[in-house]
Image 1 (tube, rainbow, N blue to C red):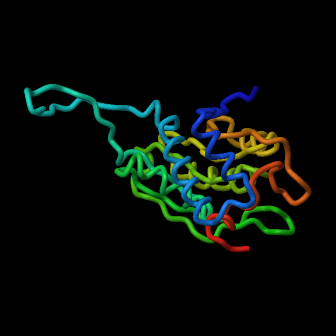
Image 2 (cartoon, rainbow, N blue to C red):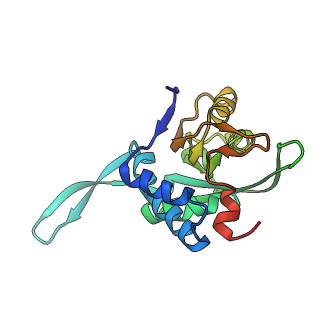
Length: 210
């Protein structure tokens, strides 16, 4: 239905996402489910990671087997809500480097305002996975990817729990080369820029704030 969009429809992913949508889910439950779901999504997101052969001594003999170089991978969290996905991804690829970009959405214009940016060195040698629970208006995602592209990484992917047609269109209008990985494509945005049916404000639900 959408070019360069990967819908991760594994039953466990969909089950946990449904539990997260429930407005009665506690902060603790929401945060735990997000970490579990992110770990599951990480398997699909890293499916095409390059590997290399190394020599390893098993209890029986010496053989050659394949490993990944986690230090070439960078997870970039869009603060603050991206932290919830970041932790789950690092459970699967603990050797990955981590970058942070701080953006908040101006409530009047819905445009992103950057307040923090910190990345590992030698980004030209690295593959970047940008994480944020929601791809809604797409404004923050576009700003984050544009900023990261200025460092010329080897590749960029964008990972979110939920998106909608408007968010996909916005990100791909600005960055058609960046694939989107998501657990659901919801119906639309409302007049306040929230995804419908969605799951509310992911940051508030992760951290128990309003």
